[in-house]
Length: 121
Length: 431
Image (cartoon, rainbow over all chains, first blue to last red; front, side, top):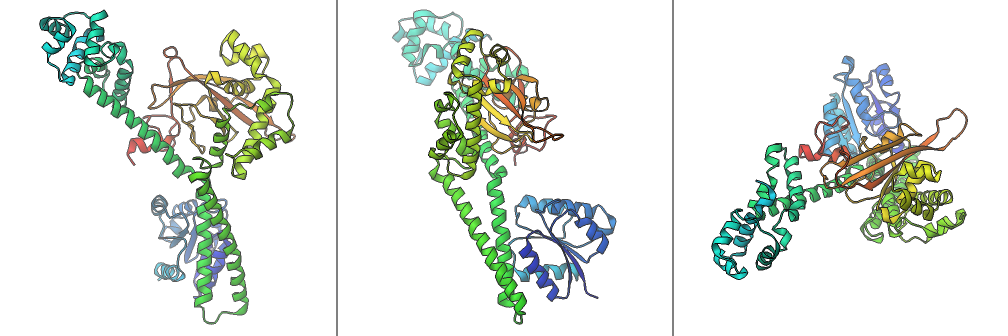
């Protein structure tokens, strides 16, 4: 059975590229373009991995991550954060909120796929 | 020891600093060395011609040897002591310190002033870096678009058997993103160009606006006569060399329309005459002139002789207009200190707020802040009205009411134990 990832990314073309790359690796990809319903969707589908942008309409990636980590069922769920906000403060905030991996945009496809494999192996 | 009793100590210190022996100075001013010795040990009072002669021989202003000359120095020393948390008893000995060690006192006061100036520089730079929304949003857009292009281009270059449908789709995405990237890059370059030269230090639309208004001394004779039509304002905005961005032109158009509307309500000449008659208390003037208080506050800011500052915010608390005044910092992008009378008025439209205020670390500059809020538009039935608050800042006279300590913005405010604090200060935590 293929693995399942929820990708929360409001940049349509980035989301499309990631969806293509992960689909080629055999992943089922659920894409969301805003943060409002993200936590609910994640609870419903129980994915193997969550990929989160930080600046999202409705609810930020930090808030989504915080909500997930507050739920014991998702305390260990791998979360890969992808953001154009690469300042050390954002990285620290993400780490405090319990992120599994933090990557800054622009990133290479190989780097992103390596991170996905690492987090779900 | 009382300050006036320390003139002799100051003479001694100045003489030693000048490299003069007691006997040499005594000879120059025509008194005996023993008498000068008594003066220098504060055992003889001194004044009049003898003080003038000693000051001339030492090459200093006479009042540098007397108590009055050191008022500014002592104020600076006490402020430095307060900021360092020195006890009141120790701080009260500033005059003794200045009298006995004038050279060191000058060094300490100079250093304290330099620290204050550097803190102001930090404040300005920090504000720009942390809160420049235009730059932050542009950079985010640039990086996001670059990320999309990089991923998509790599797929096209590295995927050996890409279906034509996907290939066409990714080509279209790259085309779209490359146009976005180009537009974002142009926007950033135009913004930075404006900042570094073309607009004389203006770095954001708000700064362009303030530069333009400042160049005109916040006074526009064209708008004071009759009722100028919108085309008059449009022409003024288009002709202004300081207004480069579309945003600054937009903001200035509203500001100038407000000036024209206010001028139709209250002529500056009438206001000037009323100030001469009853003084500069805004509420009294508003009652005498039958003028709404917010309008009166804006008009008072346009009288150059009052040297006033002005801050206007909208219902969200965002500053939408500023006329800067030395000694009171208004952050360039929101996040102002909530203790300002401006926000007291914002929460109570129709009322008038007043407080004597001093920003932390600037004990030498107090202001009378007068504020009022008004409804500026009603969009329709059962909708919340848009409200604006106006705060006039008048330089306060020394003495009088006790001043309320306020900040500019939490991030650069050194005030400890403030109940309104939203985030730590970089000044107190040393970040």
